[in-house]
Structure formats: C-alpha cells, structure tokens
Image (tube, rainbow, N blue to C red; front, side):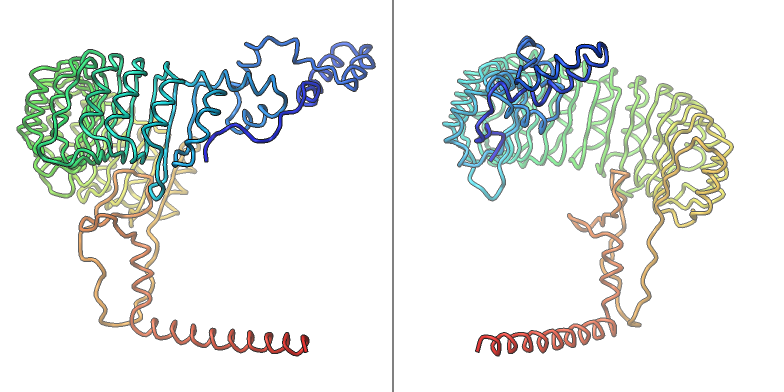
Length: 543
C-alpha cells in the first residue's frame, strides 16, 4: 500500500547494539588488543555504543543507505525509528483510496518530506482531495510533487494544495482528471515553480477549455514538458509567458504549433533546448525558432512537414547547436542539403542522431571535416550509409567516441575501416546490419582491444511451410528512436510488432499449423487418459 511505517514493534535500544556494536568492537580490538576483554564484556552486557552518536550523525548515515536498508534500520529501536523518519526527505507512495486512513500516521512520522510521489494503479480508485489537503498541511515545505493516475483529484483539491505549498519547485502529473482551473491555481500560487511536466491531463479535453496562464510562475519557469494532450493549445499562453524558459518539450500534442513557435521566437531569447515529436509543425515554425540564437539542443522526431529548408534556417542562425536528433520517418524530406548546412554553420556539434534519414558521402564528409568535436554519432535505418560512408567517418571523425549503426547496408569491410580510424573511439554498436558478421565484429575487437563492440545480428527466419501465404503487415519498417530497443516498429501500427514475432507467426501457417494442432490433440488425449487412471486409482483406495 505504500511506504508506510512498519507494523512490527521496534526493539529496545539495547538490541541496537547487535547491529553496530560488533563493528565497533572489532575496530577497537584491532587498534588495542589489550582492551578486547573489556569491550566484549560491555557488548555482552548490552551497552549501546550508538547512544554516544549525535542524532545528526545517525541521520547522515541513514541518508546514505538504500531504501530497503533504511526500512530495516528503522526497526532496530525506537530512537532509530524516530530519526529515520525525521531525516527522510524523499517519499514514494502507492496511492489507492485505501491509503486514506494511514495518511495521518504516515506524515506524523515523515514530517520532513520535501519530495513526494503519489502513484495509483489505473484499475484502482485513487486518493481524493481530502488526502492531498492533509498532505499539504503536514508538508508545507514540499518542493517536488509527482502525481500518477490520481483520477479522483479535482480542481478544488489542487487549488487548496497550491495555497498551502507555495514553495513547490517541480510538479509532474500524468493521467490525472483535474483541469485548467486546478493548473492555473498551481501556477498562480507557486511563484518558485521551475519545472512543469503534464501528461494526459484528462480534465482538458474541450476545445473551448480555459487557457492556462503562467501566473506568478512566469519568472521562475525554466522547463516545460507536455505529452499526449488532446487540447495542448490551451497551454500556449503559459509557454509564451514563461519569460526565462530554457527547455521546451512537446510530444504528441494536437493542434497547429507553428503560431506558438513564432510567438516564442519573438518573446523568449533564453531557449536552449527544444524537443518536437509527432507534432503538426512545418518549416514556418522552424524558421521562427531559428531566431532563438542560443539554441543548443534540437530534437525533430517524426515531423513530416519539416524539410531541408527549415533545417537550413536553424543551422544558419543557431550556431551554438551541440546536439541534433532527427527522425525523418523515411519521408526523405531532410537529407544532404540540411546536413551540409549544419556542418557548415554548427562547428560545435557534439552529438548527431539520424533515424530514417538518408545522408550520402557528401554530407557525412562535410560533417566529419567541419565538426571536429563530434563525439557521438548514430545512423539508423539509412539506406545510403554503406561501407564507403563508414570509411569516411573512420578517416575524418577524429574525436568520435561512440558510434551506433542500425539497419544500414554495412558489411565487414566497414568494420575493417573502423579498426584503423577514429583514434578516440570507445564503443561501437552494430544492430540489424545484414552484412556484418560475428567474425567481422570479433576481428574488430581483436584489432582494438580497448574498443567495446556490441553486435546484434538479425535472427534467421524460419523456413516457410506453406507455399502461398502472404507477408503479415505490408508496412515499411521504421527503426525505433531508442537504439537499445531490440524490436522493430511498424509504421502503420501504433503498438508495432517485432520481426521475431512476425517470423514465429509465419511459422504456424500452412501445414505446420495442422501438425501443431494434431500434436496438441494427441497430448491432450494422453494427458486425459493419465488423469483418468489416477482418479480411478484414488477411488479404489478410498473404497
């Protein structure tokens, strides 16, 4: 039900010696062997050496322990229980409705909490406004609050909480049901709020919803992250009103965002980081963002209306760019022209991730030559990146430390080029490249002993049993953003199916399906006869 106080009765202070005193005895005996007898006698008598430690020292020790060790330490004695509770500043609780009756006791013990997370299972009824109000009264110094699936919280509860916890600095909510009034109350009362993260806020679904304004947090907000919002446009006034905003992350929020980005470029000059994923944004929005000349981090993920023109605008004006992630979604609207502009105008580039983009030798050579500080490079799902491109990277990317190649037409010859190039290379990941064999990876490891080589080959397909079955799912295969994901997503499916699943499913078609069915029937028949024999045996014994 959460990290509530244990129901086990704490032991007396004398028993605390069993935890620490043995270590103290061993240490002092090592320093002075003549005192061994006296120390052991005191230990047997139950003397608690921790009583001489100030409470501040014990609290410092508890803070260095893991969560499980802290819980166990709190059961040693009543003193440790009290000090552990008073020194705990971070608390995470499962928050179903049943937690309500434990709240007074919990926060009587944990009265110094400043960072709190309340998470409820989506199938359970969550805590309500009364619990949130109690917490705000007990923890008025709360600086961080995270709410997950607390669907019973309303605008009124959020308003009361915000009035009681005005020192809040970070707020995050996901799958909650309060709306614009609760959010506005939070922003109006919490003038120190620096980070705001909102995901699937169910109370904001109407197109005519009340706009969310920055309130007193307009001068303190530094980070805004919005995810999966049906009516994300109602946060527009909040974004453009955050005068010193440094990081803006927008993921899968409906509406046209070009106009918002235009206003941002006119009012906010402090923007350093921008994430745009699956948004309705075009080159007009990117051209506007280019006026944010301090931009250092840009993520363009599956924004099909963005082309080379918008990327060129960014590159020409945002010359401090350090990290660039582009997922072109295999639309071929961003390519050599945009990347050459980045290479020409952004010499400080440290990290470049290209997914579903098809750069050629021209742009890669320009990037390798001009971006001498490039340390991390990922090329995923690029049909034009072959051995020649890897040779170019190996020859010219002197500062490169990490290289990831996924679903590209690269062979063992490309691996050979890496053996003699990129002198600072530390790690290479090769995934789902059909031309790269385990022998080539082993040879690269042997050639450069300090280099970590991670090879993930494609699983061989099972032989097809039927002659005329069709391929399951005819959509193009798009590599995922995360290079560590072993599955391959399908563009036409929101959830995606892995290649191995598709292969296994194909194996059950045709005659193999009949064979599997007959085997199952036969096994069920044998199992049924065995069970019948055992049951009849039991009846005979009973009689």
